Amino acid sequence: MTSKLKTVAGRLRAVWMLLLVGVVLSVTSPVFLTPTNLLNVALATSVAALLAAGQTYVIILAEIDLSVGSALGFSAVVTALTLGTYGLVPALAAGLATGAAIGLINGLLVTRTRMPSFIATLATMSVFAGLTLHITSGNPIPVTDYDFQGIGQARFAGVPVPVWIMLVAFGVFGFVLARTRFGRYVYATGDNVEAARLSGIRVHRVKILAFVISGVLASLAGFIITARLSTAQPTAGAGLELDAIAAVIIGGTSLAGGRGTLLGTLVGALVLGVIDNGMNLLDVSPFLQDVVKGLVILLAVFLDRNVDVLRRLLPRRAAETPARTPELAQHI
Image (spheres, rainbow, N blue to C red):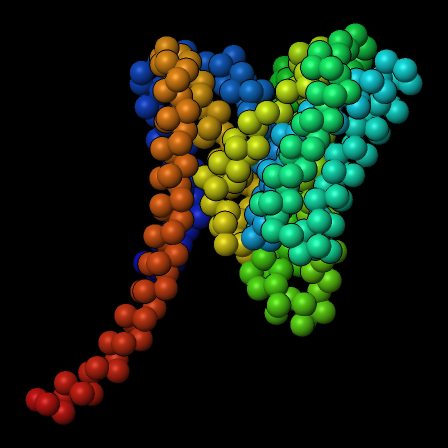
């Protein structure tokens, strides 16, 4: 029973972190728990959370996608350019197709060329960031379509639309990961790719689809940030891949693969969002905010590594105890 409680506590460490930060901020700032501020936290978290959702699929496979920030910026520019000429629906389709295409390229590079995902996505990050700046000449593209702006600025039932998009996306892709055959294949491949291949799973297809999902969710995040700003910024996604990876790690997904949930990732993204919001409320220097987030990431990784060690050591000790008893009895 004790080992089970430790396992549950390890999986829910992001929840404990969120509760701890929330309690501290509710004491130090009377504004923190107001409905308006909490909605602002959810709204500010929505973009990084969507990137983190796609990143979760990739990291469960023991891979990584560094190109999500560039995919966001490039798909946002494609969407804005298409919107001005062809209208809303073709623009949304073009943006999603762009994100899917970037994910497909990443997946093919990783599976067909056997290139490490860190190197492959680092290269595509640079490629698509450069293409975005080349197409726009470094200038933002204004977006004046009222319906498109509603994606980032409208509210439904008093809640910002980006928050609804985030919740729906996590619900859909969380269901796919936890309740479908493809989701089981993702976990199996991330846990042991060779065993998954021998059991008949097309591991290359699974990895490609995971990268495509990451690209599609990056383009969806691009819709939100473009609609909120009413412009497609060429550098809109710069640095967001780090926030996405941090949210996944804090949420309990193992970098070694085979373990993780989208619910944990959502909580991890909220932890980062709450920390950012709290430090702004407390007038903490923006230069120190990155320091605090870095320390939180180190803590999450430390807990992840040490929980795994404890899980391996505790069963051994339990197994060794009965084996030593007869030997001691003989000596007595």
